Image (cartoon, rainbow over all chains, first blue to last red; front, side, top):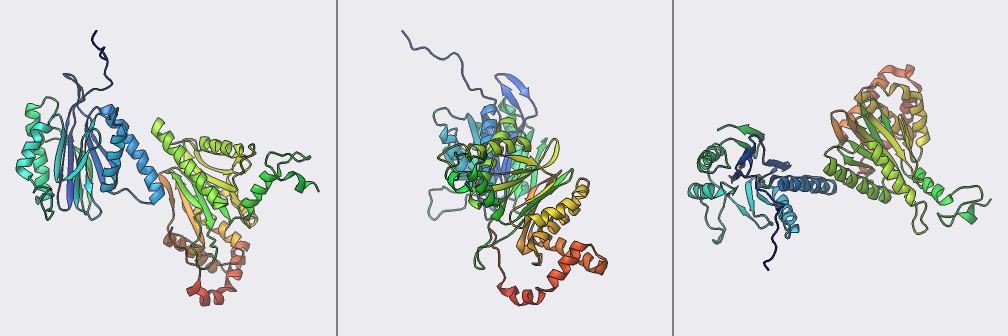
Length: 221
Length: 277
């Protein structure tokens, strides 16, 4: 008598890829705009990017229903923080909150692969990368989602930072300027969309700069 | 005559059919420093007097943002007010989370009133000792409500609570018909004039008062001291220019402020310095 398996799964994978790159005084976050299920397209025009705080943006791929629930949770917790502290949450603080929120559902996880990007308190770019249950790390660049296996090695080649294990600690952020980083992001989606059926070239992109920031826009290529 | 016999428990009625503990709670509201509110069709303004315990201490925060479209001014036991503000903030956040739309003010005040009523019918509780002026905007327009410790709530065009609020109420009663269609700036000006009434002679400065606004296209926020001082200066200059032919209230304000002027100058350095909380 074999164990009965579930014939229904609460999860679905809506595909897509996310990328974030941090620089000395900027941060670029981008995600493609396709939402799929199985071999079908649900919509060509979906934003996987969500602004969590003034200087902090999250891009998530995976199961978009869980992603939406996660975004709402974080937004509510951010409101409480603002009432208590009279200020916006910083990017590193939000990073920790996201990790804790994900681990809270360790035994029925949010099927959400996240990349958090923004500026820290000194105006330096920062990127945090997560798995589905909240394990996270501050890095100089990252990608998540269905195209990440294609994107990540390319980013490693272009932006590889010194190992975080080195002493003294070396800067993980890339020395590239913002325009170069944006160009790199466009290239990355152009390449990934060639071979990953769930990723398209079209992306929403947010750029944080120390002096000003650009609201997320749909950028074609 | 029988007041002292029946006032030990909130759950004890007096022979005249009154709950004295609840009435004592409303007394606490009257002892707190003044808070006023007024509304037009599109905006609501809240104002309060900053009273500090001593010259060394900061003043207590009496106006709280509850959500982008709701704010509250309190009078009475500030601690109770803080707790109720936290409750209101929570309710707004939970409603937004579930319905992805802002909590209508009318619903919030009913929940608040029911919460207050519970404390009037449990022997192990006491009524909240704070009166709340809830200012909010929803689909049906701008609203101002007053929630009292008894669990009653009322909607107002303009109202004042706390100590010396009668002076402000008199001013508001005289002027309230013009509020409905007043501009935002006129409404703030009226609020400052009403606050000035409660000060009864003391000069009106931005240090001694706090003003907050919520309106169509304007999320709830507390006006910063610079802006408030500018508005005070603006209408005081107008009053001076108008001279003795000015309205009775501005005249009274002028005469009253002329007297403490020399003392103010001397005491300026030692004046109460409210710290930003």
